[in-house]
Length: 347
Image (cartoon, rainbow, N blue to C red; front, side, top):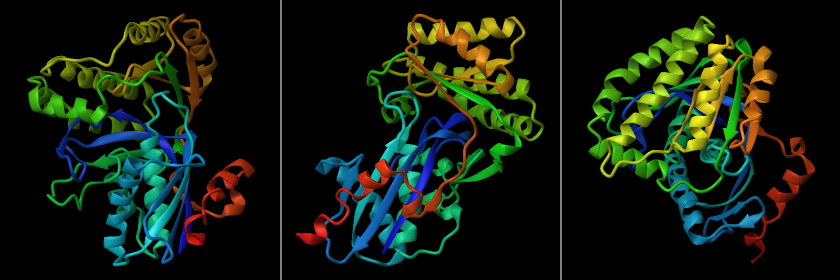
């Protein structure tokens, strides 16, 4: 009972910010993202009667008890759905730059959800895979699909109607996404903590909820009509509104740094000079810059000249999660996935 899957990271254009249920990862608002081509996670899952407990190998290394427990808790949801009580060997390889602002948890849990459900023999569609992935990492539900993706918040208490669905294939409208890294250190306020503090204490949060669904509808229309100016405008405004809510939290906090503002100002200056370019920022200091492919070389040159910029990663819309054969893997990935694969069954 084995399967191998690959899923890509995504960035939120209309942000997911705040949970209505912390355990089920149910969001307060719907969100919209682009799945990216450059960065991904490849995961194999094998359920075996010879295993006495779950094992998790990440990038060739056996993980600690805490990390393995997270995977076991997630696999429990798959086991319960399938009515199967077998432990699993999970091997993952992350092809995601560390601390660059691309959440590897999104690609990681999307790949794990698809590989685990296939390995255990479940014949389910991607909407259910998305619902399962959401319970590992909220944004993972969007990485199940490629291109432009909406995560519908749902209203059901059990989360049965909270999952992602595709809006448009990435090949239908190519955009350039530059992830501009200005700080590689760990965040002082983690995303989950920041969300909860904001929801619980910020007087600005109600304003976020009052406008975010309208932002989403504007963004969806802009995507369907390939209106880059309208999309960029609403995406940039939505990010700034999200970050404004953190300033009203108790205690207040911000993810922005001086270097973050440097990039934002450079983007606004390019736009003033006639280059259509916009920014968005997740729960961290690094900036994602959106432009059209014909302008990407110029935009990258301008951003690279900023002294506080450490590195830039160029991406475009990417594919959804898919099941792979081992023969499709590169030699390095195949070696890492196989390194500990049958370790436990021989002990």
